[in-house]
Length: 627
Image 1 (cartoon, one colour):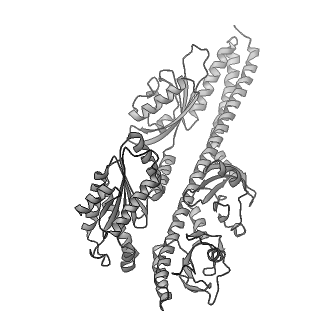
Image 2: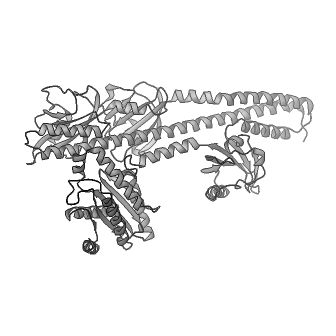
Image 3: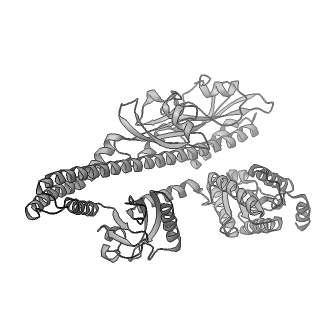
């Protein structure tokens, strides 16, 4: 049907409104994507701070056990204070995150401390941690309420542990402290803007730190805050929007609660700053959009003069196609369209920068061409889901440019509306380069799962893998073996040679363990202090014994000096082994297997050290006869 040119203004107005709506929806989607990226980044920041806090707290707890052991050994000795002070000095050198390390006796007197000038004659009976340990039988280290230190003058976290005399009576408190400013300085390493903030709280809601520093908040309880009353009840990690009660700013916050210490971290950025940064980035798109609108209006006017009797539907179709292409070509992402067979019909110019391939080399070719098997499988699965009813799919794949550069691409697939039931499925894909984010995420994961000293897996990642490997062993009906490895008389090694030598000793033992545990499915970890753990997949009692004995022999062959480790005179290890056989009952837990291996390690220590003992009784007898 041929229509009058009087309908052209209506068509132009409709096209303008449609384009404005499309532009508005696109910008709204871009803004939501920017908010999503900010939420993910803040959640990862909170997780990194929580893991750092866990490590600092764990490091601050370790010296307390050594200090209590020394106090117990030297009780009643005339030079007890000097010996404790000497041990404190060594512990402080090995623990750079500590502010102070002190021993307070049962009367509240400071017996020994790392502080250079402690106040003379001061009593510490008024301190909350002192009163807690005096009144309570709790024997483990406790993270207390932030206090202003009388020793350094700074706000600190006290980590304290009760000292018991030989007769079981209260013998005082050992205390290590961590500066609150340490975490404020650590937070400055994260890109959260000038108005960024963070908060660290105990699991019960007590505020431990806030950056920028807010002394009035320290020690207060925020358990009634929506973070605790609402969001943490739904999950241990996430993000939400809120108005700060401190500075009344609208903020986006990412939170994370540690499963090791219960510490809760909230990392937040100003919503206004995020909006301003996004608007700066979007300004170019808006300029292009304005030019596009002007061009569209001029083109419509020209069509009215030259094509007076063109069908309105044909004009609208051409305008919409032009708008789609201009919008796609102004986008920094790769926008492509392909048919039901995966043949590309259109590719935006940004493919040259992101894929390393000009768009005209891609049009008319299959989207699967040049993909790795893994990437092709991922894309075909997403396409199959679109075929059976899904309207939107997203996936992440690795892409190798013609130059050899590897990049990570995130692609969102959207199925175009079908004109009728018989029409073929057509899809629009938006692809962006997320390599920087992927690398940062992988680096954070690596840091979070590796022990800094030994380069073995840390205890947290070991425990996660332990549960996974137990489930896999039960499912596949294959054996799983656990080795617990402990350096013999390691405390004496530290006392005689110093902690630097002790650290080097652990590094060399870890190197031996790595050289003996090479299979892809196995894992070796530093479980704590001088203790290491190894999980061996598809390894029965004999296989576990062979690996354990190889580790023991190679460590002994290092002949690292240790005069106090008699009768050997050098560093040795004891190993306890436990195996989950294929026929074991399904209710045996990872903790039960660990308990068996730990008991075997204890028997190896009792039997004279420098040997391997299996938790299985029959094998234990064979092992004893072999040694």
